[in-house]
Image 1 (cartoon, helix red, strand yellow):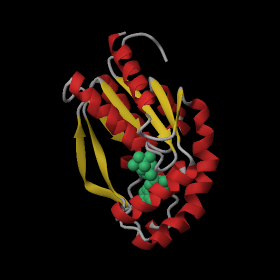
Image 2 (cartoon, protein in one colour; image 1 turned 60 degrees about the horizontal axis):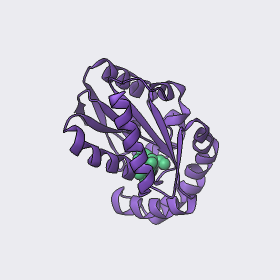
Image 3 (cartoon, rainbow, N blue to C red; image 1 turned 30 degrees about the vertical axis):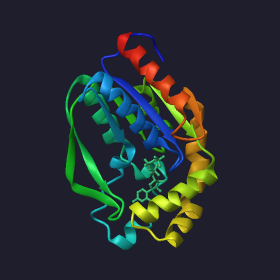
Image 4 (cartoon, rainbow, N blue to C red; image 1 turned 180 degrees about the vertical axis):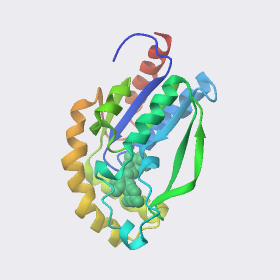
Length: 214
Ligand code: CTP
């Protein structure tokens, strides 16, 4: 992390599935947007960059390992972040967890002073790490993550309990151990207990303000 003023501050938040990444990202966003003003801060989710699978059948799509780095189009994410840093707007793909592919719609995203990036595999890619001004790893216990994921995927992502548990054993947990947990070494800050960690939120907000002022 440098102490110079940044034209665009990029904060990366990684960690296991359902570790609280989107909660902490959203909390920092909501609390800072009041100070910085609308359009000055935004959140980008790595999940929007899952590869397009419209050419595959549903049967083929469910077999994809969504926790392996190859499932994500990091080339496009790197390209979009580089464009935003330069001051150009981008069109972020929209993703459907029920269709397991990209939708035809996109979300226009204008350049802004602060971008909070959140996603499981962000810290595994050196190009993304290089673009980040600060990186965070949510170190939430895996049993808590599994409980949250089970409830969320059944309630919000159209899954059955059986399918969530099978996927967890087959890919989610092994890929966490192989790729996500080792990427913790690259984080500047490791946050225990989850997305409601008030001291971590306040420290991150203070750091963002500091980087904006220089
Ligand atoms: N995933 C899936 N099916 C897809 C695409 C993704 O089941 N078609 C799952 C992957 O298995 C991966 C997870 O989505 O583990 C990534 O999203 P996750 O990190 O759980 O959600 P966030 O809301 O970004 O994070 P958090 O729960 O930490 O807030």
